[in-house]
Image 1 (cartoon, helix red, strand yellow):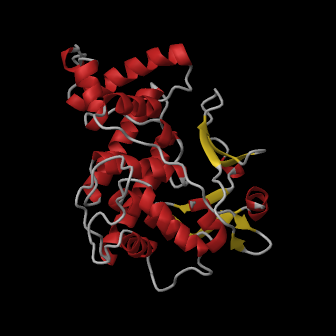
Image 2 (cartoon, one colour):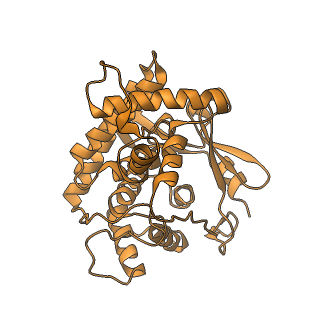
Image 3 (cartoon, helix red, strand yellow):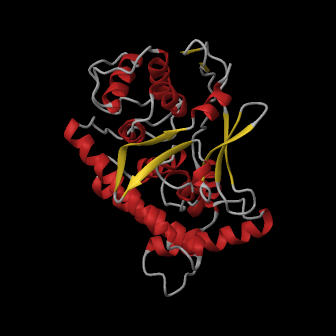
Length: 326
């Protein structure tokens, strides 16, 4: 849905950051925010009454939930992935401050990624963990789960490298905690004397386990998969994956069609570690993002030092037209 929004209304860097911020800060599922995005997509013009997409989404989510006066967890909904955490809507100043932190941290951690050489898996997990700590420290209302979702969604919309989507550390909360303590008897394992903290020990254990699993299933078995499967095995309540019928964009009429079906996306390593975000329309596969060949990305964000330029967007319209033709 985000890419459809980009194509219809044009890319503004602040919008993509506010979309990610709103999801991580106010949503515990995709249900309500998808409904809000569908309303935005079916409108004829960008809503200029809202200076911030964050507030536009908040208003629509409140209407959808019939809670017009709500100020906490306004994007929460059915089929939740985690419980609401009483996060109050940001003010305009808080939005600007949070986005500035995100821009600076993302630019910094993209540069840090280039320096990862020795023991790549361990160092990548450490980078993710370090970025997560920085986000939690800088942005009020983010904990382990929300900050993790912020990093993952940021990677999928192109403002962080895909390596941050792939390399998710295992954590001691929710389903993974149950899996580790109740099924793996993790607390009884012996660890190296070099591991000085609980997180260091868990990270070292994770690296060891994943390397064994990769020998069995190839390096296409990622830390992200490990975190997800441990959550599914260890959680106490039944969760459901939601699939949506969504509108397409009619190039000729310049309007959204009736709800049809969403593109199918996949993060694919192609057995080489060249991570790409692919979309499949039933006939063809398109590369939206590529970790090693960003020049071939359909959507690009231009970077200027620690800032991401608001005018630094390029949308390859012809390739978008190929995908969204009806």
